[in-house]
Image (cartoon, rainbow, N blue to C red; front, side):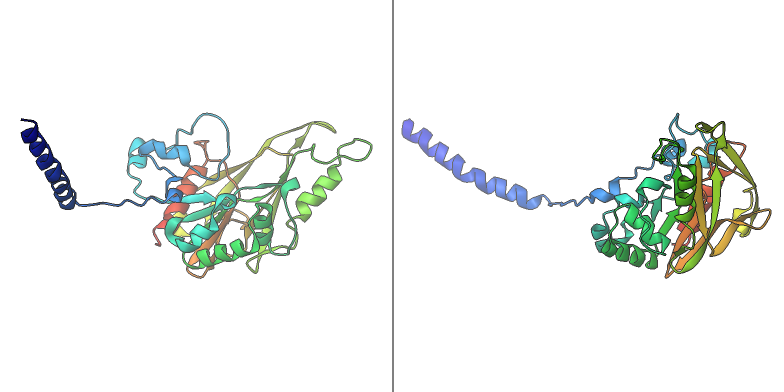
Amino acid sequence: MPILWLFVFLLLAGCAPKGLEESVRQEPVRIYTIQVDRLFFQEGKGRERLLHFPFVSLEKGPPPKGKFSDAFYEGIDQHYEAKALGEVNFWQLEEDPKALDIIYALPIWINDYKDVSSDLLTNICYSLNVGPEEQGILKDWIAQGGVLWLESGLYSTKYDHFTRSGEIATSLIRRKVKGGLQGKKLLGKPIRTYLFQGKNLDLVNYLPRQVTFEVVPKDPFFEGVKRLRLDVRNYLQNHFVVLGKPLVSDRNGQPLVTILQHGRGFVVTLLPFEYRDVYYDGELLRWKLLYYFLKRR
C-alpha cells in the first residue's frame, strides 16, 4: 500500500506542471500600460465638468453651478487634457506631445516675478521655474499643435513692500507691477496691458472692486458673449493680451481676447474674467474658446 500511494503521488505531481503550463499557454496575456500624466484631469459628466472648469481658476467657495441647462452640460462632447505651466513634466511631454491639449498660466505675485528678459513668455517661465531647455520644448509643443492659454499678468497687495520707516511703499509697488510688463513682447509680438487698482479706503486699507466690459465679438464664433466682468481683488493688477488676432474686444475696440498662431498651434491671451456670475458671460466665453481650439484638431 505505501508503494502504491507513492506511485499515485508521483504520477499526480508529474502531471500538475504540464496541466498548469497548458492552461497558461491557452490564456492570452494582456499587458496594460498606464501613463500617469494622463490621469491628472478627470472629466466628469454633465455638471460635474464644472468642478474642473475653468482650469485657470483658483477661486475658493462652493463649486460653480453653471448658468445653462442640464441638457447643455450633458451635450458637451469635447474632452481635453490641461495642466498648469509650472507643473508640466516637459521631458515626458517631449516624448509624447499629444499627452496635453492645453497648458495654462495664472497671474503671478509680484514678489515671484523674474524680470530677466524683454520676452514676456521667458519671464513667465522663469517665474514658474521652467528652465531654458524646457522652454524650448514648450515652444516646439505649441508649434506641433498645442495651445498655450494665458490668463496671466502681475498682481500685488498693498502690504508687499514697505519703506524703511515702515510705511506702505505704494509708489514702489506701482513701479514694479506696471514696469514688469512695460515694453515686453511675447514670441516677438507686442502686448497690450490693462492696469487695475483696488478702491482705497485710506492709506492702509483698500477694497476689491469690479470692472465690467461691454463686449463686441470680432469672430462670429463668439456671438452671444456680451458682457464680461473682471474682479480686482488685489491692490494692483496688471494684465495683458498679445496683439495678435482679436477674437473679442470692448466697445472702444480694445482687444480683450486674442490669439497668436505659432506653427500649427496657438497662444491665447485674455484677462482673467469672472465666470460664476450668471449675469455675465465669463463661463460662455471659456466654453466657446475650448471648442474654438479643440474643433481644429
